[in-house]
Image (cartoon, rainbow, N blue to C red; front, side, top):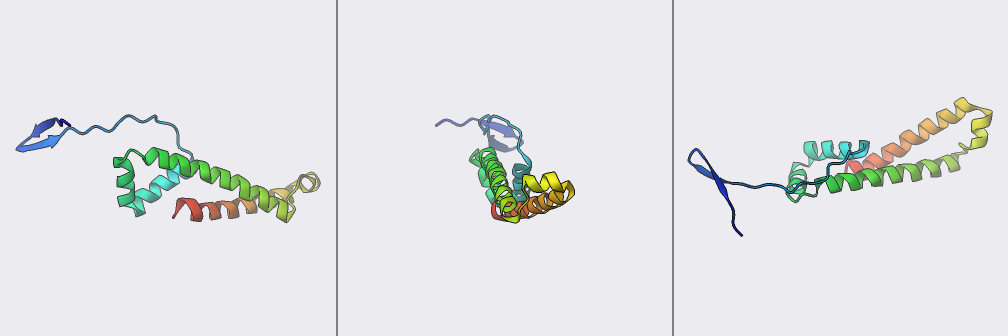
Amino acid sequence: MEISYSLFGDYLIPDLVLPNEEQQTLGKYGRMRKHYLQEYRPVLYSNLILSCKLFQHLSEIDHACVDRMNLLTRQMADREGATEALKAVDQFEWVRHMNSIQNRAEEIVLSELVYC
């Protein structure tokens, strides 16, 4: 393997180039995970960058969080009776239930997948 070097002052620095990755937009949970890794897990963040697996990791976390949120929201809504019948009878009560369910589901997802 041949490595090229550039001269900077008295030092020879290797010319390292990361492979190009497809840049896609990250969702809310992927961005939150990236911020968490930068702030609280800098070694893991650096390792993921150097191995070119950061975007893949963030994308997987984002998709897993969205799937988990949908599942938890559906299960909690069924268990607590936030159904279409309630929505037809009392929309404000249904909205109150759904907001509460979504907040609790998001708290679970964040603690299980994003901030771990």
